Image 1 (cartoon, helix red, strand yellow):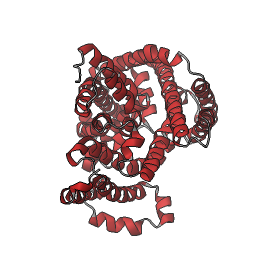
Image 2 (spheres, helix red, strand yellow; image 1 turned 90 degrees about the horizontal axis):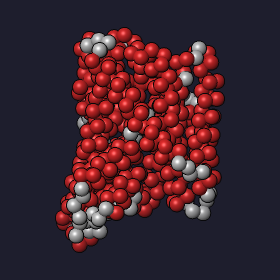
Image 3 (cartoon, one colour; image 1 turned 90 degrees about the vertical axis):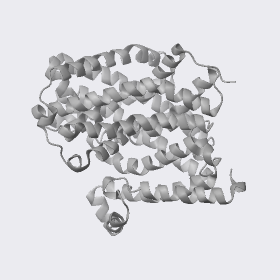
Length: 450
């Protein structure tokens, strides 16, 4: 029988969940979104919190409800080959392709770049990222107490400084939020654009990748049944999710307020630095840069360790953990030198493909007991979702790449046929139709259910 967790245990789990997801990279996107959305910041923030906070919580609950021992097992409900594909794509995305390089570029853009002349930026980024990943590799190969020290000392200091900064900005705003008109897609669909902006946190895929850490902790506390595990996950995640949502909303509002003074910055890192120096001078900029850098180092070490261990487990006859760690650090260093703005731009098409598959897998895992985790339901939903997400991938590519691929020949008919395609949500209706087909197959021939 499942035991009832105490308030102290829930507090411990909530703290673990917050630390699992919230990294320094999560700071830059709500600030930049606030600058772009202006007076529409509230609707944009609501969409952002849905994908940046709600989906990660559901992802962990799905692992608990399905009794999966991780991402590979959960995605195996679609098929073993698909599981290899999806697991590799997800870990590469939250690893050496985008998330790990982003830790170095966020640190650089917040702490170093504002202090340098424009002509020295590229060389400085190269030197900084080389040193950054040498440190990351060193601690990835040599487990050390530094992670505990950073987590227990620097992260609280970082959050304390962030709280002081945001509260000061809210009490003494640079301008009213209503003073700036929304730009681009925010002018016509701020909620949908905020929803898509939440993809950049990569927390929903991370929930499927690392959520088993929280699930294991809950099971060790004496909660074993899938239903009780899901309930405990949601309860434990309520406080951390509320905190994350509050931080996102405050940062978005502060970003919107800063636009009247600084305009729309190149990225959220630059905006965050300008806001810090506006209120606390050069000391604020230095303190922000140092704390962000240490927080990013901790995140990068954790990601390198997780990705290397996962690929060694998936492909035991290829390379060792040490080799994967070295290769991932070298690759991340190369990608980091494209710069933060380019990394965000390059990651968008991949996230537009990955997130619909993440969302549908999460929801199917969460509610799978209603259809006995019938594989046909998983396949019926995943196939049309993947096809529609591939169109979103093409639509998000740079104009030059679309021309080379002659993408408009496919995208123009798709925009006329698929509802919500122009909002980047063209996968929703195909996924719903696939769900209807899968459930019909399950009801008509339930003996074949898995």
